[in-house]
Image (cartoon, one colour):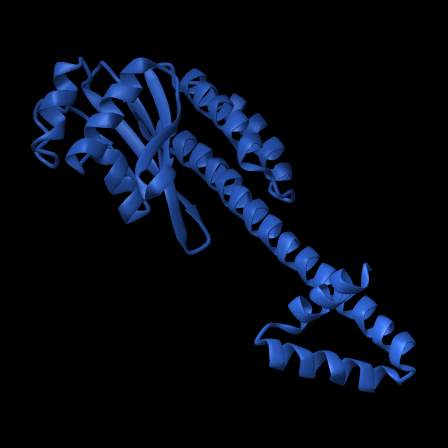
Length: 235
């Protein structure tokens, strides 16, 4: 196995760790990670990444083959399997032979029926949070060695960075929206205060007190009171 592709990919993704990437951008990069992982570990027939989907359910965010989708779907349906354990336990898990491994008594026999014999999975850990898992499937027993383990952990680290950044982008977006809303409200109050100052020929503090009193009388926020005043005045 040649891990040079993984080593070359790591710096590129690491550079992206300094950016706040949108969910769509991450969705475009995750398939690249799984495809490259599959190329780096040629004994694997499929690779995938599991994350939280809509509604908090687990979903395969990137999969290289329909076989991955089917094997993953069985894990989600049965709530057991190496991928889910790697996620929950935040570690690397390998199964050399699904026909004899008893850790997943319901999932393993069904996965074996799909033609799978071995699987390796690593949790995606970002800081204190476990955000998902990446996995490799093989139709051969004992398909994954220590070098494969090191490569998969590398890819897990890169995927975790991307997923965590997507969350940061979303949080930053919400923060930006909140800040913009606050600025809009402040601008409305400022304009209403200026309107009262000009109409009543009073200083700023008295004009602001007037807005506060009006808001209290109307049972609204000062922003709503200011908005109503400006609307009435045609401002």
